[in-house]
Image 1: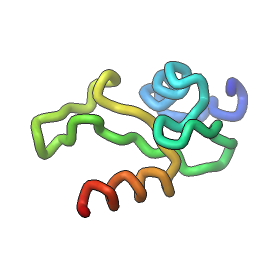
Image 2: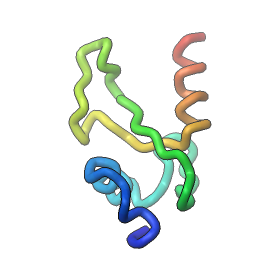
Image 3: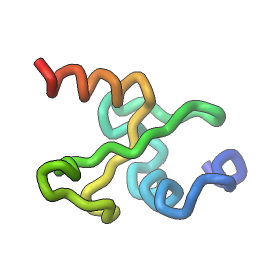
Length: 72
């Protein structure tokens, strides 16, 4: 992970390390240059916050899938 992700914001870097470089939704490793999104486990609209324990990293397309499933 190291050099490829050195420009990530500190919180994303911590989450990436915690998740061992894998998407929390699909389990596939993130590749350099991919859009990595933070997903709230407990949505902010329902009282969730931006703490590390309430966030996971997911691919952009996985984030879209998660929110599509929530709205159905």
